[in-house]
Length: 148
Image (cartoon, rainbow, N blue to C red; front, side, top):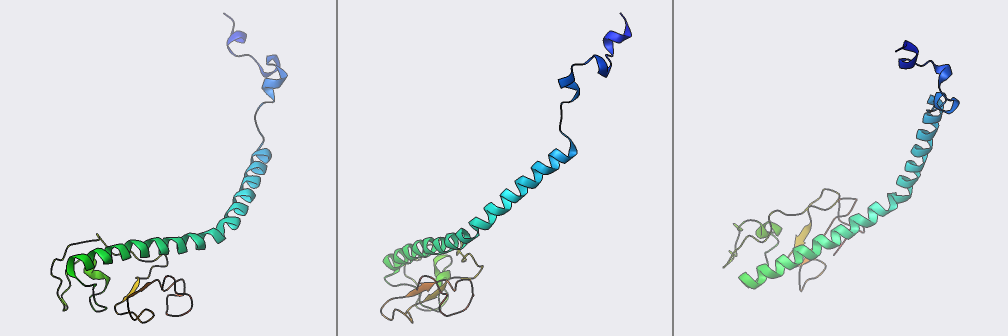
């Protein structure tokens, strides 16, 4: 066996095989195009994040409301403002003590902006019921509240 068969020189390889592969410029160009497309996609979806957060607040409020109704069925009243939503997670220490307390939630959800949900019974906005809402992105009482 000759060494030329084991180590063919580049001249003996076909033209297409010698020129295969991508240059650094071509790779960088493709990466640049991908970066621009990803940036455009993120920019166009940024408005959807706010909508998703508001939908999550609506879903959380519905879930908490269902547990408040269950609490009321067991104890013949909803938790007071002083007892708060914590009454769904641990037995309230404030009066009136619940008759048949049960743990109805593992933990209290917080809104997408990191604030606890506001609960009042009797309500400020619904004097004949209760208020349950998120303070919204501002984190304070006012027009930006969601779910009153």
